[in-house]
Image (cartoon, rainbow, N blue to C red; front, side):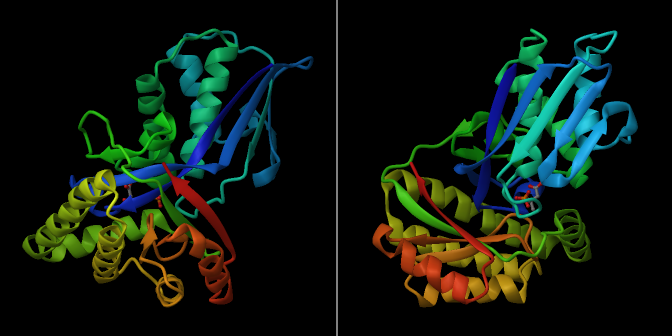
Length: 308
Ligand code: PMV
């Protein structure tokens, strides 16, 4: 039996602007993860069991563009695996789906590594990352690649599209409360709407993306130095730009306001927006209070995580 797991992630700064080549910062969230177990099957076929998404099927019965089926087919193709072996593949995940926490990328990374290792195919992190990016396109259409990168390397990443990966260091650990609106984030749709907005006035929105990129750039420095109050202000500024891009929502804004009102140092939506998660930077001793305030303001779930 071969087991592999991959963490969830949150985007700290730069979502949407990252699609337009500006930098973004993302970090792994190890409190949640996807896990894949591959064993040789005693029956013919490749059997996939993913109870969290109510999927119990033989590979050949899945549509070929289903991300799980596509990952298995692509891997077999890449490594010239023929005939297909008989396998049982069990997929489980504690990462909320469509919430901006990278659940799709984490399942693909864990599945790719578990399968490759079970079949004695060697894959570097770089190869796993590139492989997962191709599958991410089935989930999101035109992803920037930030999700697969942070999930593959499981390290804080300063991400610029089509640039070599760059990790960043954290001067002083800080605490983030993640709160889920419980509304699925329609990332494909919000990315497409931002594209329309951009095309309506490229000069204006290019400037906005520049400002957002400058925030990510400044945030990397501020995180290295451990200047938490300044980091909180940068989060607030970033959220205002995301509102202007029309990717916030009344539910996200309510949670952002609740976090600030309860004493957070800063707060913003995280990921594609219009649903999914928001994040708040908090003093460690305030984390429980702010988490309770977020639940009272309608959060379906909260996670307290330390960024180290
Ligand atoms: O919703 P998430 O966290 O999977 O990511 C969306 C991030 C965007 O910048 C909006 C899109 C992208 O591909 O980077």
